Image (tube, rainbow, N blue to C red):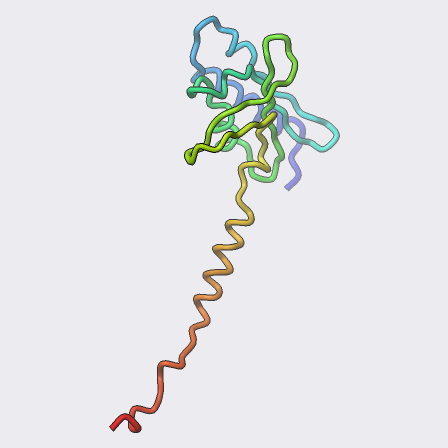
Length: 140
């Protein structure tokens, strides 16, 4: 479904305002750094915030974007430092692996391959092999 520019900008305003409401405030720099923009080439959305918003639940920008923006609109969250240059975010997964990303986007969040795997397993489970049914008269 194609969205008009006004509808997409309203989604951006909703995500930014919700994130600013729930962001933790120390100096206010995090709240001032949260911005969103419509990229006209492909009608995608780009959000920007200071890199420390990704740590310790300082900002819930990614969660709000997942919740508010429709699934068919492409969006990204870019993390910047105090000078405005893009920086990488580093963290650890539950298993202890080191993760480093420059940006988080709607492509990173979807799990198409996992859903396809689950669907194929379910499809295989529906086709049961009925070789267990046989003629019991021979067992005497």
